[in-house]
Image (cartoon, rainbow, N blue to C red):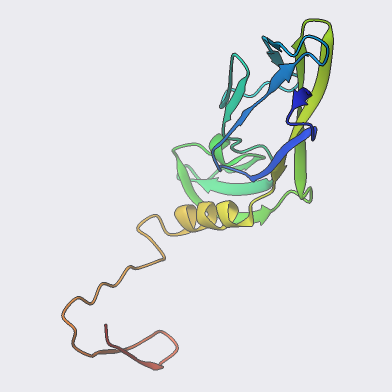
Length: 167
């Protein structure tokens, strides 16, 4: 029996997606389950290890180049979205981290047996797009239209195209 899962890659998750992985160990000779202790090699405050379970989410794990202007007319450069101050006037430069993934490893031990497991985190372009939109236009670039009347609605968009919509 041994380690479960037998695959040492627990999974691949997108940045900010929640996850939960459980690791168990059964001794091959005695067929008895043993308590598993998990230690993070790269601890993260948003990932919690409880008994034999790893759960949480990875947030802001990739370094970008974000340059912004403050309301005091100073220019600041940071590497993470959560480093932007409250005094932001606007973002004027953004370069996404070129790394497409980051791997976090964990050591699982049960008695004298041990196994290294990993979680692969994908660099999420969607997250960065939402952050840029949030700072460029805090009132919202995306407008949600709800047409519950069942009637045809027509309007002209910014490209001077006529749009017709019926629910």
